[in-house]
Amino acid sequence: MTTEAAPELSFEEALTQLENIVRELESGRIRLDDAVAAYEKAVTLKKFCEGKLKAAQLKIEKIELSPNGELQTTPLDKVED
Image (cartoon, rainbow, N blue to C red; front, side):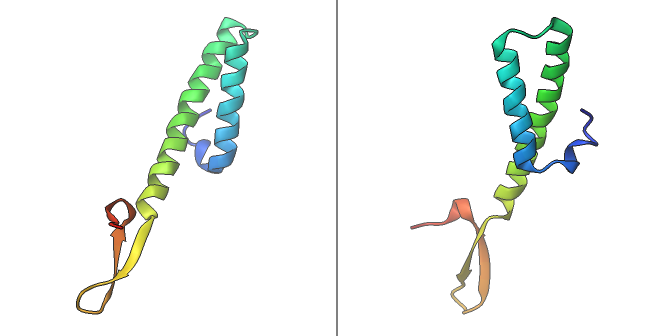
């Protein structure tokens, strides 16, 4: 899998493919050459999934009213309860 092919996948599709590769590698019933290729694909899928998660995390914000009455956004991890 090339990095160019990864954007065509949704996060869920990439994660499913990654889980399938892990199961296949853990089974031990895969030839060495195929295992190396599968591992390389898994690394690409992992990086893709991490990038999607990071992008989603950056988009999550809390909308709140500022002291002067204007709407503003605050990153979710800075929300105080």
